[in-house]
Image (cartoon, rainbow over all chains, first blue to last red; front, side, top):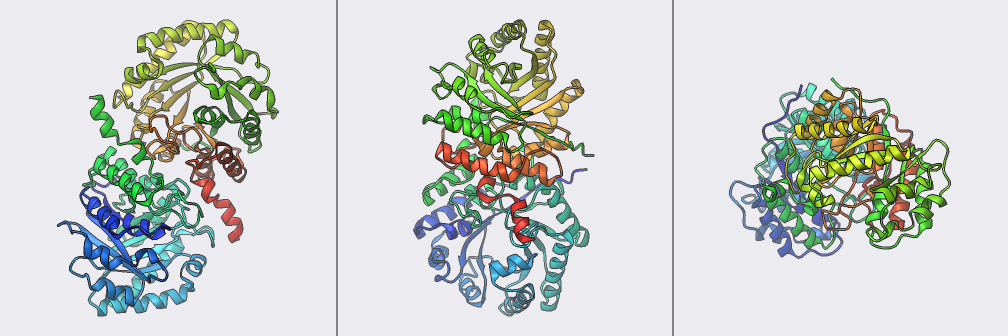
Length: 319
Length: 319
């Protein structure tokens, strides 16, 4: 009945997602401190920065300094995000330190595509065709298809599972054309529309079509459903999740500081730990890092766990 | 495979739990305003106040004024909380306006019993024997057995399901002795130790022994697991939940304002609504009341949904 994974891979996106949304300038040294502390918790995948235009995202004007500055821990994959040729070239300057891999980034709905990327779905398809070719040309593998708004959309409403399957199929078409070998299908609940039965339907539909591919989930806690959704997905065997320490990231749609963004890494680790699923992460260390993140950004973060403490810590006291 | 209920009964405890923990004096008129607004959302069970010693809980020194002040809506059960004879007598003065019903309140663990009630389990058993007799004597029915710390304890650690079953059995022994007819077994995750598989085990064990009784859940979101736990319980057919609007209540254990307390009523209603389970509650109205609660207490509440808005509101815009 249950298809629970033995191990869950957590892709920590706190530094990249988190610092991007904070209004105040965060010192480069604090960014480096957080990245190094995250690696010390046992996390194996850390998205360190965004190579975006400093005009659009001034918070990442120091992407180069940040990547140059942190001491890389062996065994940890440090990744980065970029959206165009210039970003890719900036990332390539760090190809020995960062694990560079491209993504075919698609959107389930016309509404969010227009709002977020200012492109129609057709225009985004063409943009991804060019971008995938560019990656291959530069020797950067493209292993991932990402679908934003895969569970619903503030602009287009509900998203039928078939529409997500269609979009993933678009991605495979683009990959094949470019000669890219896809390993991961990443589904994002960009605006917090997912609930457990919707998770089951969409993942079920995608997996039925591509049973051999890893499914990754990028969940937002916009409406408080993220942990329930992660749990439902794990019961279907999903074993790869993006998350952010402390729930860093916030939600640009909520229009309010302190509103939830991504699922908290700590809560995901707690859930796994208590269910006997390995993550490799030391939860008590991670909670300390969550508190450090809170100090760095200077306001309360959405993670409940960094305020309450782990169960293991209480078990030790009770013993 | 799934035993999903058609209808979920929500027992709103926001006024009682919420105002009790706020440091500032909340005007009686604001308490009344919130209680009346909650009834207008379609909620059928509202715990309006606590008849406790004003010395211990000064925030409820105006319990009488509050109950006297609100306009009762037909069809809504307004309840109250009390812990001793004096509280019961104060409640009895409002027996026409409040739905008075007693509870046999037990604790799963020695550690929390000592810490919270300053009694051993044996002493609490004796106290409940007296209190149950007193209720029957006063003509107030005792229909509920409550077990605190039923999923784990900050002071005693993990709680085996058999220990919860034992405590519920204690309650039935006390009820039988007093001639009380129990209808509801209420299990409380007082300190946020539950995770979905633990919910399944404890509820499974209790239901196996008392299959004819309603099981109610009182969930706290101390570690971010409350919605996932509610979902797991609903899948087992659990159809009665306590909750608080906006997540009012906070957590006295977290030692931090803004830390989560009870599961948010809005998130519970959203989950039900999206799963096709009736609650009778108008979610958009409830979200407005959550925002009102935030204004009344003067700080951000843990509910994500009051910051993000309902899906139905976005669906209407998208249509």
